[in-house]
Length: 245
Image (cartoon, rainbow, N blue to C red; front, side):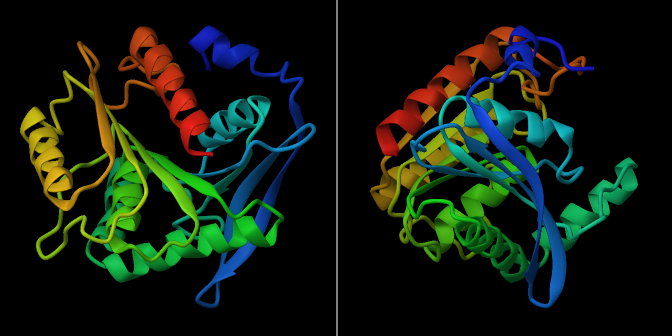
């Protein structure tokens, strides 16, 4: 059940959403299935949305629709493969484990999603954003410096550890990190560490921390959901989009 952020901004009543559809695309010879939401009228820019560890689900589709209602073209990418939507905790751990242990594959799938978005007519200038595992993946792409025409990166309650041997020296676009102060899995020491690394690399970044918000505070219907943190982070992200696109 979807509840709050005013029922996902009244979910079904999205007057600014002109079209939404699933899109099959290929990366490295394998099929992936993304989701594209297009606004009515002229687009303000493109958002590439990266899913949580359970794969591309109705949650990401809802967020994509909400962004399209705000005037943005949105492509929700698929990092697992068409039809691969793990349901058990064990299966989800296995899928994210594959990508955490093969960063080259993770980056290839991120870049493949970006290419697919543009092949569908999305504009070149793009903000890349993601939730939880998707937030960690966004930071992986930011560190890589491989994505062209990216105007910004945003991580919602994402993993913040920097893998050994990596840094932010190649990160050219602004980075926004939205973090829960009560996140037991991603401690504030990780927030301080990534801030230090980005500061040393000269990255344009901002970090917002929401008191009392546990991990995954944006997930509608979850017992972790925190409406105030969701509202504030969504507004902050909207401002970030307006500044970067």
